[in-house]
Picture 1 (cartoon, rainbow, N blue to C red):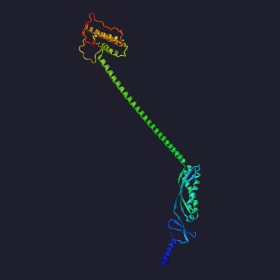
Picture 2: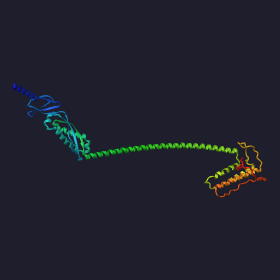
Picture 3: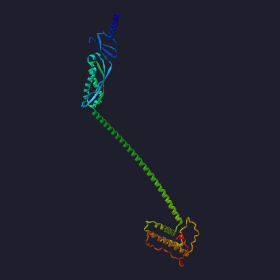
Picture 4: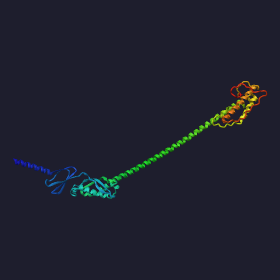
Length: 386
């Protein structure tokens, strides 16, 4: 019985091994290459497949999906003898599993080496500046060469990308400096243009301000001149009216020579006042004024001679002329003495320390038989005004 059990177990194991060798399951997007006695027999599609056990063998399982392979950076010399490091990325797909299996031993390594040689050939005809700015041109040239070379391998190259182009550190530093200088130049140009525009706007603003200020000053001067003209006109009209009023009042009052002479003498001390008045000239008209004062007193005893009627005369009492007496002579003498004292005082003020010679006052002749008498003095030292 034990032998029967052992044989049964062996039969079961043989059946299991036979099923394993006979039934082969191929995953989706894969292809199995079957060899019989070392020779290609068929390609198994995806799914359940039956093969002859111990005769047929699935030698390779090929991936039919698009694959991405990134190659490490490779040194490449440019036309201007600069070494740059370029790393690439290849997108490819196996279209013929038989050719990919039997036409080339390792298609990944073959693609890598072909990429490096083609890349050096393309970049070797460009300088550094063109290499950095011609990525699309390099990609297109590299893809065309790879697709043509890998077609017989059953591989289609869909896309080639340059992942990085790294120039030497010294060249990179020089490029950074050049870029920095270029940016600084552009910044300086923009700053200068901004300054120029600002200066232009400032100058235009100042010009407009100066124009407005000049126009305002002109209008102000015009208005001020008009105001000054009107003020002068009004002032002249007022002065004219004042002169007319004073002139009319003088003519209405009809002042005599004695009154004018007395007023003249009253102003003489004021003329002599002041430290700067070193020389005081006595006008010749004062003698005539004194003569007029004396003659007027002799004629009508201080009342001017009427040549016409007074238009507006203040009532001063009786108009009868008083009789000449010794009192009138005394008043006249006092008036003459006051005039003489005023002249002497003016000369002393004009020439301190010197004795000025003053012409003797004109004394009107006294009436026969009248002698000067000492009368009451009112303290004014001047003849009564008419």
